[in-house]
Length: 196
Figure 1 (cartoon, rainbow, N blue to C red):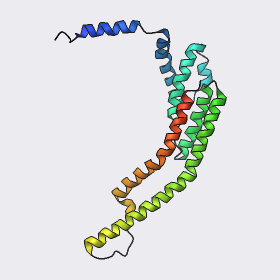
Figure 2 (figure 1 turned 135 degrees about the horizontal axis):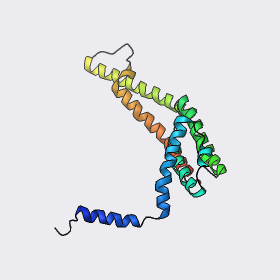
Figure 3 (figure 1 turned 180 degrees about the horizontal axis):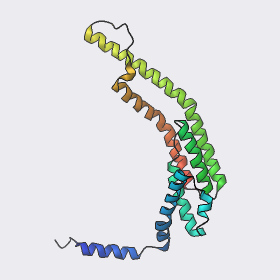
Figure 4 (figure 1 turned 60 degrees about the vertical axis):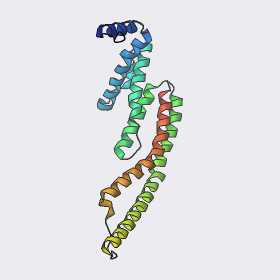
């Protein structure tokens, strides 16, 4: 029983640990969330990031930049539709404004654009081929099942696309195809996070 600590003892230990907090940690706690809020405003209101960052001194501005960058980097997504393409462009402009090393950012952006291009061109072709292959496979299976259960061959086409099993398999297949692209994109996003 002597090993169990009271709430008072636990609170005292936490207070002792707080006194060991460095000034850098306090700066992070204060300014990274401010950067996150700035990123949210940028996404919602189209504020000027550079003007907003100028309101901070060099040290605090560094943390604000980091907080805003991390939020914006999360919004870079695979270009599945025109809205995402437009938002990616806007987000990437914002990140570039926040980063000091513009050349390193542009190098990562070149790789990201290459992934996006491949995803929209060859990836789209891959998805279409996979969809047709899966559809044919399901139609064949449905005809075989009908043959076995009813004892007659079906002459008409079966609309497998409406079948929940088909839709579920298609989602899995899409996720499998997309995961290759997402893995690369996530690596580049990590690289982007490490750029000052």
